[in-house]
Amino acid sequence: MSDIILGWDPAGWNRWNYAAVTEQVAVTGLHLEPWSVGRSVAPGTGVWLLLLGAHGPGLIGHGVVLSGQPGHPDQAATSSGQPEFTVQVAFDALLPLGDHVPAAVLDAAVPGVVWDSAETEGMALESGDEAAVRALWATHGPAQGPDPTQPVPGTYPETAVVRVTANRYERDPEARRACIAHRGSSCAACGFSFELAYGELGKDFIDVHHVVPAAQLGGGYQLDPLTDLVPLCANCHAMAHHGVTTPRTQAELRQIMATAGYLRGTTVAPEEIEAQRVAREILGK
Ligand SMILES: [Zn+2]
Ligand SMILES: [Zn+2]
Image (cartoon, rainbow, N blue to C red; front, top):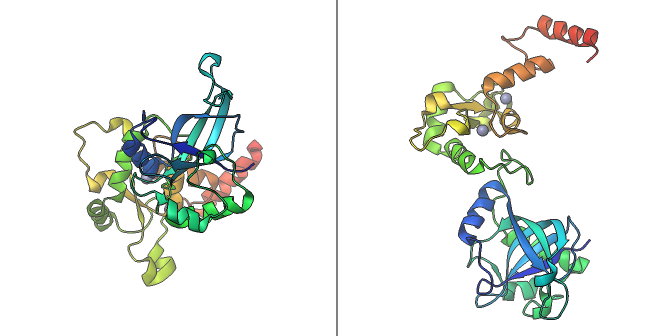
């Protein structure tokens, strides 16, 4: 299944707010958009978005086809008389307008494709060209991938806009400093210390996790870094967000680890862990 090229000429179709969509993709890693294509395209097909028109051609985005269905018969005819199909595209990387990979770079890196041609739209890439486009995108595409603590594409919740705000607090350097100064740089859930494990390299290295549920974030919300942020190691932070839209608190994580028999130290004695293990055996879990 080869990647295909989809063309976008802003002068012809521009019903999305591209700047907002680009920002959304940078933060959440996903934007869904129905897209008209000239033929049936299998779900899972990789898509390269080619900017056309006055500022193109230029490579500006990447996505994956989620589903495809034939367009409505009444409106279903391209200029060439072929039926029109609409596919749902999950865009996972978009460059801002003006930052697209320009034609000169495309021509030099992927000479097998005639980039400045109407034929390019909807075209499937040969495997060599596909590898070249991917390599090009690795260096010219958006620098940052989606945040690993964000849900994976396909689980994007409606509340994500609010949660993005929450995650901004986690990245705020001032808030981080206040949190670490107050609570130290060991993980509040499992106790892991990057400094103990990695020495000088790990000094003050810790994630901060925002514990206020998104639903409680009103317009007048003011962050209190001493109560609303907790230091978490990368593993616990990932588990705090894994599979849930309202992140888990450090207390919930401790309970989960204790139940799993992992948590050691002052809260759970080895005897308790052993007792839990025996209990699980008796219960046949
Ligand atoms: Zn931890
Ligand atoms: Zn978090």
